Structures are given as structure tokens and as C-alpha cells.
Amino acid sequence: MIELGHKILGTGETQIMILHELMGDHKNYEAILPYLDKTNFTYIFVDLRGYGLSKKISGEYSCEEAANDVKNLIGILKLVTVNLLAHSMSTMIAQKVALIDEPHISQLILVTPITAAGIQVPKISQDKLLGDFSHNDGNIEEIVRSSSKRHNESWIKNRIDMAYNSSILDARVGYMKMYLTTNFLDEVPNIKVPIKIIVGKYDFSIFSLKTVTRLFSASYVNFEVCECQEAGHYPMLECPVYFAGKIEEFCS
Image (cartoon, rainbow, N blue to C red):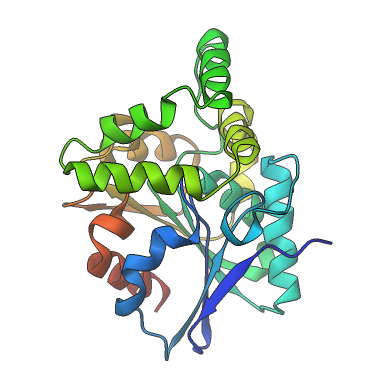
């Protein structure tokens, strides 16, 4: 059994486990650290295989593998119950964890999420995306620039550097393939825990309040959505004070 790399902050009784997105690792959350209540909460920042503190752990980089890794870490840390927070790509993984380790998950907090159906694109587009991503063919730069039009060149450069430095190439390609090809939407009725969702007003349209509400309403029951008014895809970086407060509000 492997143990995912992780960083623990705080000594509180309420446990919050935090997963990262495709183009970042636990360092995505560094901006919120000064604003966290470390007395009443314990925060566990986790890096998936191929990322950050888990860079040397290779694997299939599949949803099932990642979910089992998170489940195993919950067991290793002897957590009785945990609030599981995930961002973007890892929101699929968090949903799978809620299915396979229900007794230990008290709620899901999904930030700029995708449903259990993943992101559906035509096969030809899927192949091109994976091919370009496999060759570092400018996709990261394109994604960052198209999602960062409100921000300056320093933000863009920092985000691009984070994307490349936080993970190994095989992991980025593997997890991109995961959310392009994985679909367990039929299992969603078995997710019993409440789901809190945060979206950013200036995010891509697929992550907008309107679209996320519509997609989740079709298959999910126990969820609520709030919109961060000054963020795009990265509310933890763009609005760290708001983000820290919202997490603790959800978990109190």
C-alpha cells in the first residue's frame, strides 16, 4: 500500500482533506494558509501520484486508483470522519472516494467541479488534446492565457510555471485522460453525503454557476452552489480570504 505525500496543518478536531487540480499541487493552496483556523480545524493537503510530494510515486493515474489512494491515506492517518475538498479535475476523484469510503466522508466540497461524467468531447478532439498534452505542445500556456484574461503577465507566468513544476508529464496526461474518458454518472445516486460547490464568476462557461447548477441538478440531489464574485478557476489563489472562510463555514 502506497502512502500519498501530504502536509498536515493545524490541530483541530474537524478534519479537512484537500486535493489539487490538474495543473498544480498542494502549493495551489499556500495563499490561504495565513487565514486558516488551525485551532479548530486540521488541514491535510494531499498530492496525488506524480504530483508535488508524491512525484516519485508512479501509477496508472486513473480515477479508481487515485480514489483508493485517498481512501488508504484516510486509513493510514486513522481519520474517523473527514470533509473532503477537491478542485477541478480531482472533484471526480472525490466523488469516487465518497462512493467507496462512505463511512469516513462527512461531506464533499467541490471547487469549480465536473460531474462524474467527466468532460465529454468528440473522440477526434480527445485524441488531439491528449497528443498535444503528451508533447507539451503549448496546451498549458493556451489554457492559462485563455483563463487569465483578467490578470497580468506575472500571474500568467506564475501559473504556467506552477503547471509544469508541480507534476511529471505522465501524471498530467494520465489525469487528463481520466476526466476525458471516465464516466460513472450512473453511480451518483449512491453518493449519500452532502455536496457543497464553489464556482468562480469569471471561470470558463463549463464551470459557470448556470452550467454547473444545470449539470448537477440532472443527477445529484443533496448539493448547493455558491459563486465567488471575484475569481475565475482559482478562488483559492484569487480570493484566499474568502476561500478560507467559506471552507470553514461549510465545515463548522
